[in-house]
Amino acid sequence: MLSNESGLLKTATSGGWSVLFMLFAISLTLALPAQASNLPESWKQFIAEAEKHGAEQLLLVFTSAAGVSKAELFCLERAADGWESAMPAMGASVGRKGIAESGTKREGDGRTPYGIFPIGMAFGYQETHTTKMPYRQMHKEDIWVDDPSAADYNRLVRKDSTSAKSFEYMRRKDDLYKLGLVVEYNTNPVVPGMGSAIFIHIWGRPFASTAGCLGLPEPDLEKVLGFLDPAKNPVIGFFRSDLH
Image 1: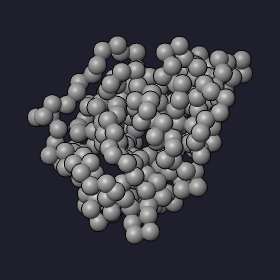
Image 2: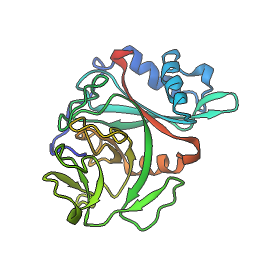
Image 3: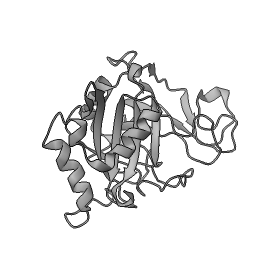
């Protein structure tokens, strides 16, 4: 889901980042690949949670504090001798009001949900794409329902098949959905009002906030799509360093 705001939201200054968050970034960008023993100690809890999902690939997204939309993305993969970093850290953006606290995400609140979620299908405008993830081409009649009162809330449907009063077109003039991935947040089961249409998609400009999704530069999104393998049950985790 995208933000309607045209301006850049708050970006972190040297005084705004927590020491912990800076250590997160430095630990992976200076040592690549990094073995599990070299990953931050605090990440063990996130890796353990990912393993509960049977995941062997984990996208970790961190912001520094509540209300911060500027983020850092780390791509981790389980190897024979433990978890390691698969590529350098990436700059990213999340919801215009930052990452929510656990269980508090609501429809239209401008926040990214907290926690770990499976990564679903890839989507885009082209008929096919070179990714191992299941892929669906989006057409002009494809929409994602964000009306909590609709029976098909938080579902991808054709516009002519729903009575929903609110939805997102999946083929946009601004091309932010030219390429993306579905984050399986509030999809099984679907709880009305808990939030919908959480994607990984192209950002409009560097660190422009979203309405709850993860925004990336297109080249980095291509790298993520090339990295992900459905056989490894990839998941994504959204966290705040001030809570850990």
